[in-house]
Length: 46
Image (cartoon, rainbow, N blue to C red; front, side, top):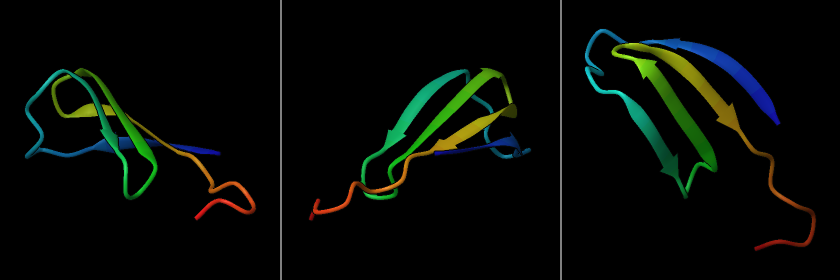
C-alpha cells in the first residue's frame, strides 16, 4: 500500500472515489486537495 498527496486544479469535488481497475482510493476532504491510497494486488489474485 502506498499513500501520496494529491493536488489537482481540475478536481473540484469533495468525497471519495474507488478506482477498481487501478485499485486506488481517492480521498478529497477539500476541493482539489487530497490523498491517493494505492493498494497492491494480492498474490494469486487475477
